[in-house]
Length: 124
Image (cartoon, rainbow, N blue to C red; front, side, top):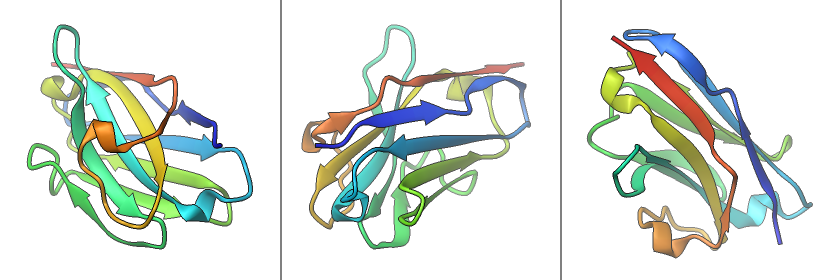
């Protein structure tokens, strides 16, 4: 089992940047594929980015491609989401998620473990 804790959210103006972190407990972090999702008020949770357990090239939603960068540091049991050129439509609660296995999973139903979320608000 793994526990996930997100941090780094906040209020930022449009065009600004934030870096989210997701710290995982347990010694088997490198056995988990990781994902970032977000949920805006009144909307369904949507995929943002995913990365394999070994790292490598992440996969991104079209809405964030070229602006967001996902990475992981298995030595620190942490994944990151660097968010640049933020837009008001990026406002949401951001969640990290984990599941065992190697692929890059883009559906929320593929993930087993979830963090509590961190709020990102982008003002216009």
